[in-house]
Length: 80
Image 1: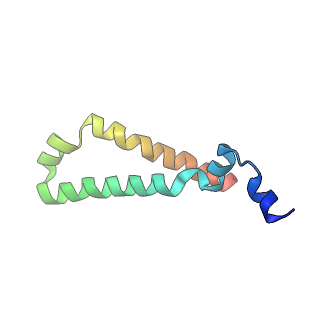
Image 2 (image 1 turned 135 degrees about the vertical axis):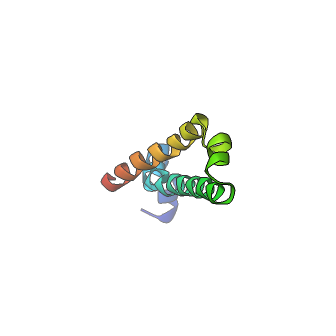
Image 3 (image 1 turned 90 degrees about the horizontal axis):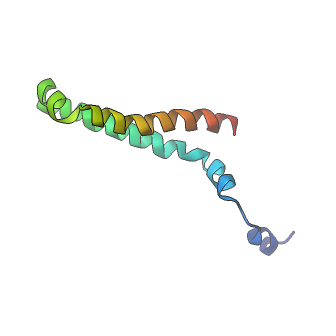
């Protein structure tokens, strides 16, 4: 096959998604950055303000999504 024929082949979105490791790194970096910000807020403003303003059930749920995705994507990228 020539280079032109190879580049003309259609790559499915699933193949591209798997080739990028299910975007595990991006999800893991987002999770780590969010956790770092929450811990930094706690160090600067203390436990009471953090629990009152930042660490709410909504924040827990929002952080749960990238944490869960990173865990599943990490396991899937090992088998890919």
